[in-house]
Image 1 (cartoon, rainbow, N blue to C red):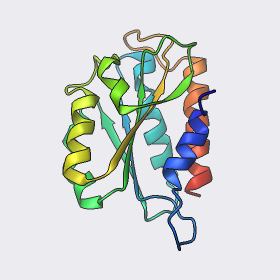
Image 2 (cartoon, helix red, strand yellow; image 1 turned 120 degrees about the horizontal axis):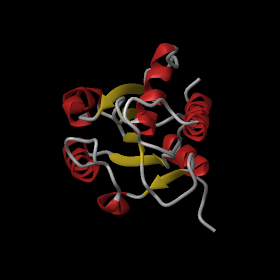
Image 3 (cartoon, rainbow, N blue to C red; image 1 turned 180 degrees about the horizontal axis):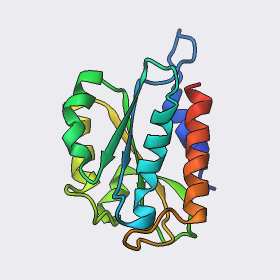
Length: 170
């Protein structure tokens, strides 16, 4: 049985480092998507709401990447993360609001039409340029209607992700 996204997220955010006390990895969380397309703004909602009351963690950078997260590559580079975590709406043939850790080799086939640059290309660039791990938490959208807000299942998923981030970065 595959591990849950929560377990994978905790594992990625708090790797065991031999001889050290457990501490969260130096993480850049990037909310992506478009405000104009309903549930496509799920990742943005997570980033924005965390930025409203940010965790007091020096090892966490939160970026509101929008439809062009590549525009923040210099900021990410200056931060020197161990992990870049994208949060994005992703069509995964799941029930609306389902959250999944999407392996990098799988994001080539994921729908991300609101992005100016496919996340797969950006992820490969960041992996090589920043020498870091890149992960994607995908949220299955219910709708992508113009000028619509988040659907209830996607809102609940965004809230769950925020809660998990806050558990690791209080």
